[in-house]
Length: 354
Ligand SMILES: [Zn+2]
Image 1 (cartoon, helix red, strand yellow):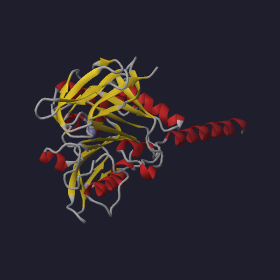
Image 2 (cartoon, protein in one colour):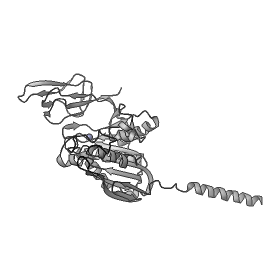
Image 3 (tube, protein in one colour):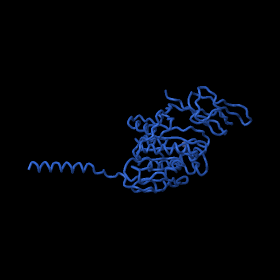
Image 4 (cartoon, protein in one colour):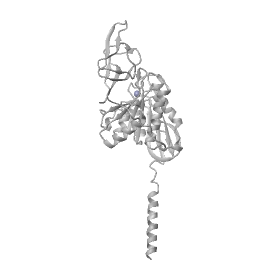
């Protein structure tokens, strides 16, 4: 009797532990972004449809790579600035590279947010309404095309995700040195994961962004829209001045894959950068007048405070402004073209954290 009872108890325990080992129900049997719905193990292409209102509508291409096994949902976004080509091409490459059969979790890929900018080769803004597509988040449906697109990306890309990576680079007129942003939200556990993510991404210069809006209703930037909603995220920049160099594209592709390894979405260890240069501020130098810009340094050059890093002439080659470094640091980007209008950014200097 005692033995039978003991046996029943052991069986009961075994059954109980079997029940514990049963997989929890899948929170995302399917995953939908815009017109794309993927079941487990599928990669499905579609688009986020932005309806017309006061101005025209648009279709933002999107791919859902729904891994065979449940896990984190990671959003990869590029092309808010549609002529930052390296970042766009990096995600185009990842659309092919990512195999849902070998992924734990899911990847939402939005490689080209600002289609009109890409097609018309217009830097910085959406030519439909003249707005930057990385300043209007979380967006609203009663605004212009950028506002509506931002709202739908918040709802359909940010909200279903656990993490987000927003890719950028130097635009047509910017000669940029690769770097990433670590956003400090003030939430220590979240900031620690985000820090590991930027280290896993692998770029060796990291800007500490501690001054981003804290209010999710006023998040402005895409990465900040994810961060203010409790999702550890990052932004990264590589590429410059309309170029599509393999080195830059590979930095971004490998960075995304390494973050996926850190998040255990892919097998193998993440390649953590060991001794990054932490940048605590990036003061910008603006032009005082319209004219012709002549650089004296290149992207990535380390400069001293008050060093002359370029100058501006008028259209008859008469000097009108010396461009002086406001702080010592690394040129994160410098103007890539001679065209310069009053008030535009000429250069940004990354001030290395002490
Ligand atoms: Zn950008």
